Image (cartoon, rainbow, N blue to C red):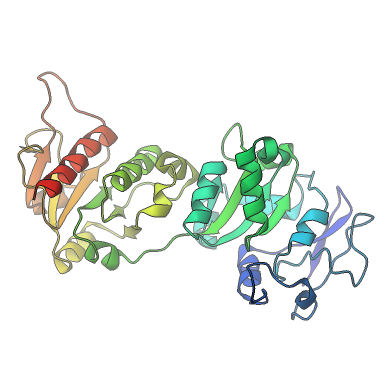
Length: 346
């Protein structure tokens, strides 16, 4: 594997993509008694080699520092690897490139920032591929505990300065951790078919903050899952922050278009109920029980006419005269929790 020299530090580091980093998770050299790999096995792997790190590096044969992402992660390498202080480092450049949504789609990964979201990713057993941490993570006990958990995970871990991690973060004030994970993937048919609880359909919601908040409401109301039809990426950094981790807990799948959605609902025995601003039956009197799919559209355009026409029922939140409408998330919360109450009465 060809390596590239980081001119700013004189360190030789591998220049690889996330597919290569995934490979090191799958080599299968960890010991039988725990998650951590056996350092002694590293040198026997095809394509694995130790790379010197100047005066900070390990001596040949010690196996303390393993720079190749094809090799399984080990705690000794993390503790002795030099701190990354240059934004020109290939690992930093690789993570910074993931700010582009097209790059994330192409790589099949999501970018996760912040203590809570990374904790949630670990608790839901997401496949973490690569993680960068900085001293800011160790400011409190919770951050230190997360750092230890990441060291024991199978993710390829980089230690960086706070300034370098800021260059990788999407938020203005980072919390000392940025992670790359394999994009969660759920089969839409299974999401629609499995549970009897209402299914949430998010159609054409362009604002990632609104989409993430809707996923959070769906999770809180015990929805069977969320089907996303067009609109924003539900796994964009902003949508993930708005979901507060719910995007990792609730089954979430994307459907290509409205026609495919209608065919899916028919095949899985779901009746389509659509939320409209005005003119629908009150959500407090409508029958929200049974295998329903509750569809919500963007605040501007609303739902596609195709779905409104095909719906078994149109529902609205009754409001005081003169009030134009509730925002998307507020209306969805009222309707979904009313559906929860209806199920409890049934």
